[in-house]
Image 1: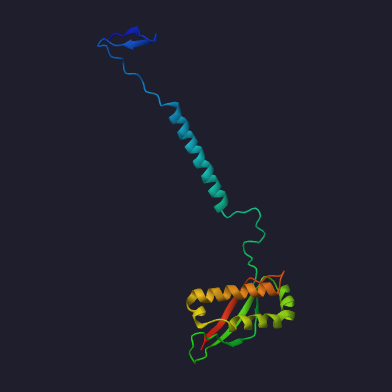
Image 2 (image 1 turned 90 degrees about the horizontal axis):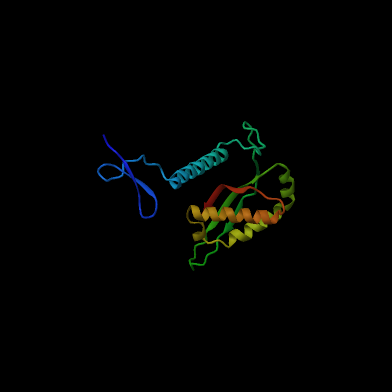
Length: 174
């Protein structure tokens, strides 16, 4: 049978010792800091998971459109534009650009505002397109820049109204 002796150390604390002079094996407790860190991590995970569910669940309180209804886009055809491109390369060959575009409008009411300023829009298109070089239209990046610039110019001409986009129906460089 094992016996335990209790002695007082130099600091005045009492210690238990077994027969062989070693302290008996006591149950180890988890440190309080470790428990608090684990609880904090679990709480942070719960907050992040809840926020993710809220934002990505698709159930928005402020949504005004019904799920089955998609707002129909309105398109307005612009007249075809044919211009000669700027030739700074010194070559004798003149290149032409033929463009057919469509304006994407947010609603039908904007059509009535654009019709009276159509000559101004055509003038804007003509003057801009005549300054382009054939290298400005190379690749999809060139066409994207052209689309963005035409959209910007249309929006400036009809301000404060705005169109959604300029869409290309046909682009020919000859």
